[in-house]
Amino acid sequence: MNSFFWAFLWLFLQSFGVATHGWRMEGFNPSRTNVSTVSGPNSKPEFEVIASNVSGTLKRIADDGSLILTDGATVLSFAKDGSLQWRQDVLATLDGPVVDIALASSGIVYVSSANRLIALDPKSGRGTWPQAVTTNSGDESGSLVVASDGTIYFHTSSTQPGYQERLTAINPDGTRK
Image 1 (tube, one colour):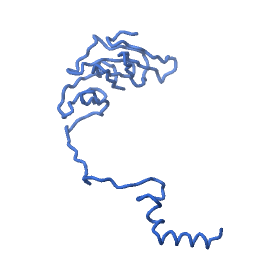
Image 2: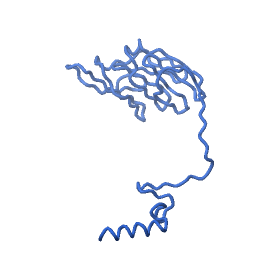
Image 3: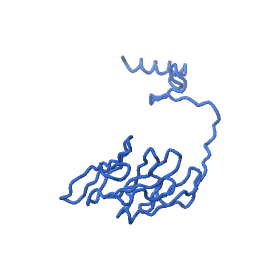
Image 4: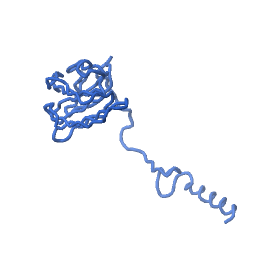
């Protein structure tokens, strides 16, 4: 087909608004994404600041809506309305900064460093085990995983040669599985 035909077709389609308004679908655009307008109120959502001057990073949201944060040395729990429920300094117990936080279905808050793991009561923030579980002498760990039966899986390693990687399974009471 020659260029005259394509030019004629283009002009024909423009005269019926197909080229600018789409074919058979209102709001069709050339990127092939279907775009349509949304019915209902067209207002921006309102946001509410629930807490100010909060140090740390949001790590988990519990089933009851509690927000669990850490700054690496302290674990904090805020109610969903923004009120501080508890604050627990864990740096000394973990022998290093917080690497990860996981929540059990029971609400227990598990906190790990590069080589240790502790369990905190979700209501008070106090430790539920007599001492931290030390799993390795390395300096690196992965994310905590809590199974449906409550078993905590903790993968540790080291950036230094000579240390073995370990995957430790820990019972909810703090004993090794």
